[in-house]
Image (tube, rainbow, N blue to C red):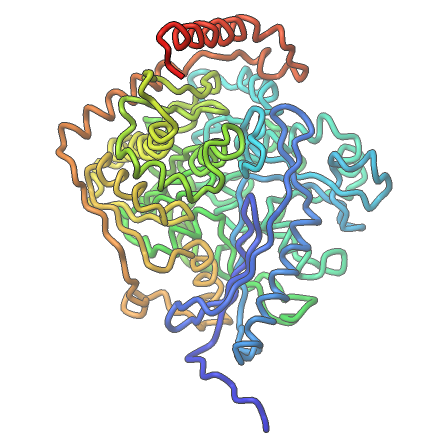
Length: 581
């Protein structure tokens, strides 16, 4: 008897969601936005030196193929015909930089594994942006500090009264963005220098590397990116929507290695291998832009916050670039079609959000799993005056203060791990409040509510704290995969595919969970002002020399060591004298 196919209403669309800690492939019904199946593969990270964070582009690519194959197998087990998958979208970690050889397909920067396994097929690294020593198990891949001196040298060449970099790109000169990482590669890696000299090198962010590889690689692969990813390189003019010659000359980047820039929704090429061979890749968005689309924030003034390794708050500003006076970034939100207009957004990023939970787990050991944080925080329901500023790699928006480092303050003898756990969750919410306040000042339109997504939103205490600290409702969709959904929507809506309508009347209604503020406004403000005091205390801890020494000595920490040891002796002595067991 022939197997019965399960009825599927409408065509399907797949989405690659390539993040800092994992790769996933998800398949959605284009008519209902229902998630039908997915598969996830964890991604390794390498920390070859203090402040350096790297990944292997070939491992990332292999993880994409594995996720696609496994998801297709799962669909088969559900009696869903994979020939119904009509398009694939790509969403990716942004800023992460890859340079590869267009004739061999090999990335050109060697990773830690190089001495063990020399030769042309060694594992290679991706450089990403801004942290000092990462916690074991954290996934802050874009947090890489090696380019700090590069940034400082470049900043000396920008006239004080004419910051043409920010006016053209919407971005501050920072270790965070791709241009300085690419400059570092050109200055420090001979294989990259030689490939550029011989016209063999291609540059791209993760989306470019994946699309080029999936559409054929050395056999006709399409070397492209979309406007959202291009806008995060610091080489892209967000007004003309083109690579900028003056910016490329400033950073010393040869324009011939750059990918062509396309819209976020058009057919780039066809899959050339695997179970979905022949399916068009027709959507591409940086992860935060994808989440904005997936949250259906298509109107001016709508905003979303994604809670992951970091937090990323984006507010749609429509067709106009709004330049921030409060430390936020101006970026391209999306361009959903070759002939469609570009939309812009204000963005603020919190470098350490979910990463602080992993730090409590891996470095302090006060929890065994990330999920335990909610249980600990619930036991006390307050931080008891304890404040945690997790500035492990400096402060990002709205401060952009690289000298800051993490502090826990307001400790008393009564403070225990539950209070620290609660303070860690509060820290995520306070940082979000700082960005939202800056956004309100720049846009002039206070938000009526905040739409949220990301892995941390399953923590109900965190969501309630966020509503209390913002003093506005927090709204969470019941289907949490908004980043992948945004990439799928862009792919399905592309000209030549046309299986996903983005017209307001056609968009599926999404069930939402709503968290209302449960404290009074005065209490919210008191807690926030105390947090601001703690942030001030975290600043000015390091200089460039100390953060880039590369060979930290224990003697640098002698004063701290004496303080810790003497404090422990005093505490033990006090307990002994008082007779406490």
